[in-house]
Image 1 (cartoon, rainbow, N blue to C red):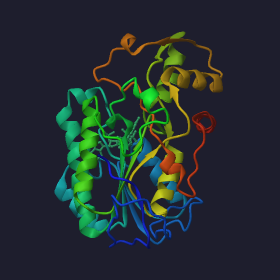
Image 2: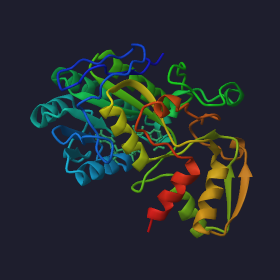
Image 3: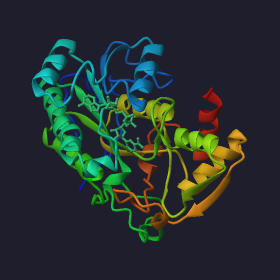
Length: 330
Ligand SMILES: NC(=O)c1ccc[n+]([C@@H]2O[C@H](COP(=O)([O-])OP(=O)(O)OC[C@H]3O[C@@H](n4cnc5c(N)ncnc54)[C@H](OP(=O)(O)O)[C@@H]3O)[C@@H](O)[C@H]2O)c1
């Protein structure tokens, strides 16, 4: 079971311990800080972003650099996070106060075949990073996924607000299993950590549903999109902003993060095309009409009320965040 969120009751610096698992408490803000309007900006701290070439990693590095924060961004070419010695060496050399791990094996269908590779990146590497972070007292921030949950159709009725952080994970595919095991490895290291579960991530860089829909609509007159899987998009920019607020406020443990509201992939696609003025015939289909290697959860909504309760976080309905996101696209 995931631990409850806790908020630091004092200033958490580099050598502090996490207070995971405790009841929610609200104290003074942490010195580990975000910027971009979230507070002091953490400019006196050193940040290390892993997976810096991915869609979330790039957003992180750009946001921190824009605020003049001391950040080292390492892509897979710079550091293979599955190599314990190299990770240890990088953490020792860079001596970060905060490590943001955005690196992951994210090919959900391929993970059914390359399960060993997915495990190495999503389970083993988080353990390696968490151990290195715990040894130096650095805060480790890890991203995880809605796919840790079973996503049963009946959960749409039973959990209309989505899965809370405390709901027992039970992934239905290899990707979800490797991410869930990775979470557990981090908790087992007992260092300061924040695990942020996001769903349906869309960023300006890299592959995501929005890019795929726009590309397919340019190639075809007619598209079929699944209408019986429900969840909520998370946009990379707001995800970085809200994670920085969590870090700054001293929130540790596990927190769910997405935009507000809920949708199906079909309605998400419809809104993308409406906002972009794309004329394409869109047909709703059931999951059975789009067979994939990996099973997908039917109900993927994350309950984000804990996030909403943290002062300074900004959560907009997914439609508003989508509009904002699309207006930034070329
Ligand atoms: N995308 C989603 O819809 C989604 C949904 C829920 C949660 N998440 C989680 O959100 C986080 C960010 O996802 P994302 O969409 O930004 O992922 P992404 O775009 O696929 O980026 C992941 C990055 O990790 C790198 N990487 C893979 N193996 C590595 C290794 N051994 N060493 C170092 N780097 C390695 C990849 O490099 P290469 O490209 O060279 O392989 C890639 O640049 C992940 O934890 C993911 O599990 C994503």
